[in-house]
Image (cartoon, rainbow, N blue to C red; front, top):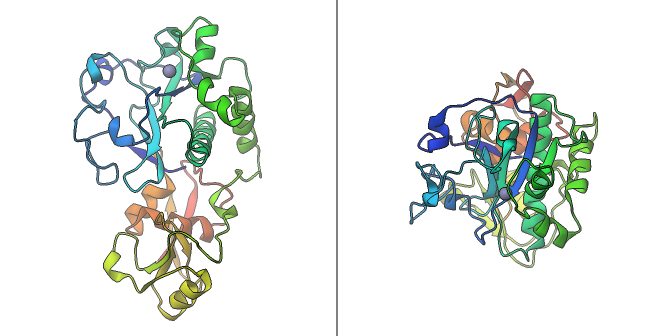
Length: 314
Ligand SMILES: [Zn+2]
């Protein structure tokens, strides 16, 4: 999970300032073809990109409506997937159009044209991880009736308005709120790594589209020593140049030398609201370097908890 935070302090919902004790989570999808977080989350923090229409939800009444959710999942301007927390989790949101606002954290998954399986799989996984994180945080049982529900299930229970989200999207890819809850439960179960987690990712030796790029940081394009179709060629370039990394076309670190010339590291204690991405951005200068923290700590999941001690590379 790539959890970031941009609280909607200008939204009338935030200003209303009512608190809840979260008893569950409601999953929404936006119902509009726009997977970009910047449509809803603003202003630009450098990662979101600029919303040229300025119609994001960090304003009194977005699109003239009294609406606000606790988080959005969608694309950053570089195309990678992130979750943005947009209200404190225990703030009363305006997402359900019913009593669920008094009990449920609500988040929106940004819909695209509903035909891109890879986008769907990425945001679905992100949503599972967000729910697992919230279940830990608020001691929620994901399988308990009414705890994790889709908007349409909220309607069936009489605690939300009549919407079909996210069933119409999930069902296109053989998913449902039942599979969703099961996957949250699985992720929460001790010792079980998340399906498709970064530690399971294997990268193809030979690319047919895009390149493996050798740079100091993804943002520092000028540091690029080369772009390669063949992974082993990129790796050998990194082996010869300490401080460089192999990045895939999306800017994720694929390879580091691992030849840690300095075996020392510093320790960091996770505080509430931290994400691996944010810690890497803060301490290592680049969010994409969170993979180094995952590796160094042998993490089985990108979910971290307040109080957890992490080794941070020097
Ligand atoms: Zn909804």
